Length: 558
Ligand SMILES: Nc1ncnc2c1ncn2[C@@H]1O[C@H](COP(=O)(O)OP(=O)(O)OP(=O)(O)O)[C@@H](O)[C@H]1O
Image (tube, rainbow, N blue to C red; front, side, top):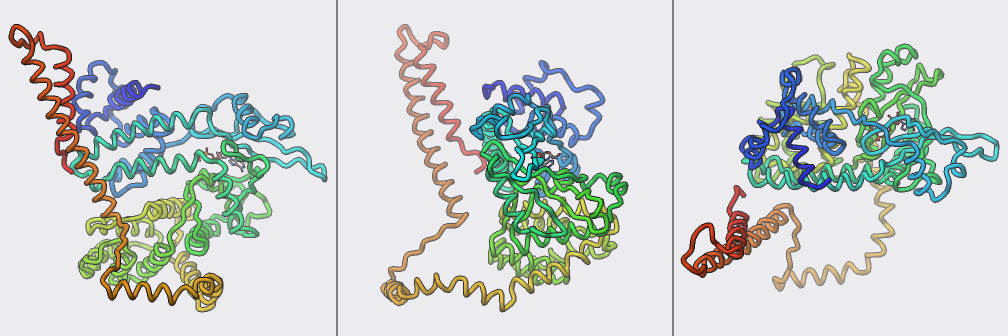
């Protein structure tokens, strides 16, 4: 769809759900006011709904990219008011399936062989259909023992890349407007939100990458009684098609089905928390799309007393840098120990906050955030909430968080939610603390550090002969005062962006004034004295061009 029509459709949907007030004080406010008489208003039932519910319905109607946008916004509780975030978290990614024959054609094209050759059977009616892909049940041709394995084939929607590219371009344009006009643009950083959506979607569009994520996770949890990861069938996987072993289980929020299957929910809830901490702090590879629909419980009757989870959907996984991982673990321990001084120091040492921040102030702020939680019963304390509140408070002190940490906080929130649903009395702290302590002891034990050192020894030995020469060169530069500072920091990147914007504005302003002068000259040259209605077309073009360029150069809250 052409961008103008798409923008018009978005405007109509926003108006229909009476969401235009969200855009007050922005440049599109005037356009929406003009369009209002032409758009049927929402029914009174819709109008009575909360703003969050109306926004959720509008995004759902606008399609997959906007659903993703809402889902990402729902995790940015630092930006979105809690009532809206809660509604957005309910956004469901279920859409009409696309034609099964089209799915067959995509699979044949991706695997470069006919369906009948690749599969013993392929069900054209999908098992599930989401905004980016749909999943079909199938069986592999019999192996040497005559066994046909049950599998599922995930197929990308036709033309989904094009749709996503169009909507992302629109979102970028909107982000640009918000960036230039919103007083809190610095805090919201809309281009980063759009970037996050773009990255998330890009990850979900590459099914080969999703397969690789599943394989890595499976390796980490091989032979585990806590988590099962289906096997990737690489012979039947390509960028647009992912084939996995078929698993059977119960979604972890289907409490009635879990109870009917006689599953020990308490044991399961504690396992969920343990799996999360192990993924983050032992493996540094966590399944980050961990909502109940993607975490099943093995329905095998033999596993009732010792239940295990099954993970699905590996498009989004998280990994922290070594530093973030270390400082986060230490932060958790400091929270467990109510050591606010340490929390403050860790935030600075991790580089999340600038070093000029006053530690005692930050310590007091951390205390103010955490203490109220300790008055609650342990079963009501959420680490994800504490973490979020801490991050939010720290934002007042120039906190810069890596997106991976936000992803982690969101995942923790999901895991705690699933855990509490399974066992409302779950004491997350009591489960998490020993797991974290054990992992930290193992991870930073002298033996482990020595083994890491041994692993790097060959690299060190290779570089060792160069060291005296490099050291000598560096010292010489120091003595002669020639040492070059090579910095790459966010501030410099930001500075670079500001300089480029300023340059663009200068060019636009010069161009604008030039064109306006042209317009004036052409207007003056009109024979018989200038009259407004008889201005030559060239003067109109020059004048409009000049006005546009001047507008582009106008300073807008940057
Ligand atoms: N290995 C599997 N075995 C059985 N069913 C599966 C398997 N993988 C996926 N499914 C089914 O397909 C559904 C969608 O799968 P998946 O979550 O991977 O797709 P998606 O397009 O990313 O969907 P969403 O965005 O809703 O998470 C699952 O909820 C499940 O019902």
